Length: 169
Image (cartoon, rainbow, N blue to C red; front, side):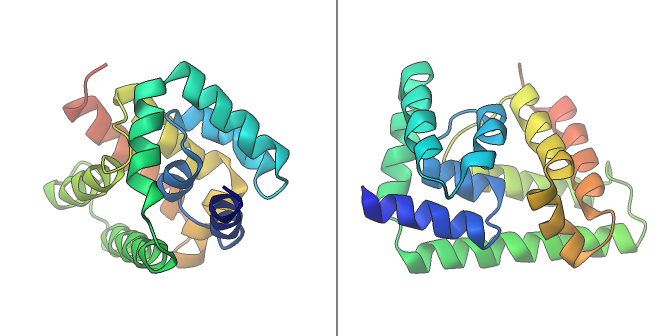
């Protein structure tokens, strides 16, 4: 248990993405993760949120727990590299002036969504909330801004289009 907490704390400290933090913390709700992120690395919030997620979304919590239980430090690192590469691809689309609704941008967002679905399956509102967190939470936004100014907003906008066009309630 302590080992898992240390992995979550380390991931948060190095700027892990939302899907990674959700996977490691067992969150089934992006919005509850947003409330939780203020407590990352402090210890007490981790258990309280895990308990809340287990209580409110037992199936999703168990699925996420099973999916992350076998993750090694190398798995976490590989996933972080994949997420960074996806952010770079989005920055390239943004720099080229590609509209967020363009088929190539939406194909990238679909790939990202499928990656998130390895841990939990967000519905339309949850996915839009996740995109908004990338803009509103300075820790997440900073990761996008390291790659390109305005990238968090571009990512959010592309996620909103995807959610509206492809995801159900």
